[in-house]
Length: 231
Image (tube, rainbow, N blue to C red; front, side, top):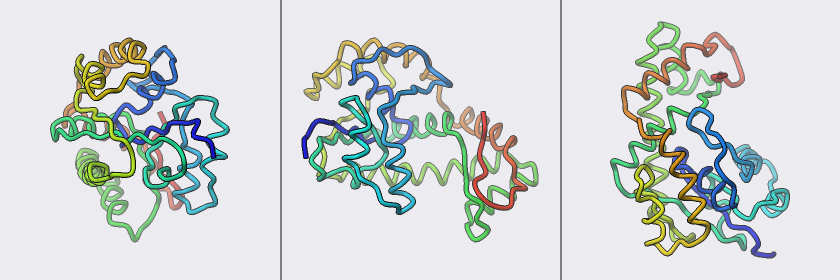
């Protein structure tokens, strides 16, 4: 197996798409709802792994022409012959800020499962038009999952780490340089400046309001499958 690709592994909301786009030398052209859309991702592979279906990492990587590829997976892409960079955030305030960002930009979706307390609680709140309560409950559960996953990343020793504590500041690129990251820093600086202009206002109240507005549009009378927010 050739080591021709570098895999960037990150928690949702941590600007993995921005970083990957920049590492592949691409300029940031536009932001959609403060999100960066870029093609070098292992989302298909992720879906197969999460469903327990056969998946071949090397085959999926060969379908992607870019050198840097991102994913939310970690264990599943390490020790496979590829460089893996584990994006970490150690600052609790920045961790929380990133959870806010994730939940503001995330397309909410939940599978119908009447035996699952998360689904039942959110559904009951929404059917009672208590969308703020549903949003708060969803947020607290999502935050716990995010923090648990980040704690796992912080203890992980099978991949190289890159610290994103300065993600929401103009010192982000300089901080990466101090960590001996040298690849495509100039284009990252240009892209990050544009990104930062659209990603600087995150709070609990705003997050709950945005989540509640999404929950209001979702079909809580659906009897099976996934209940999803559609922009």
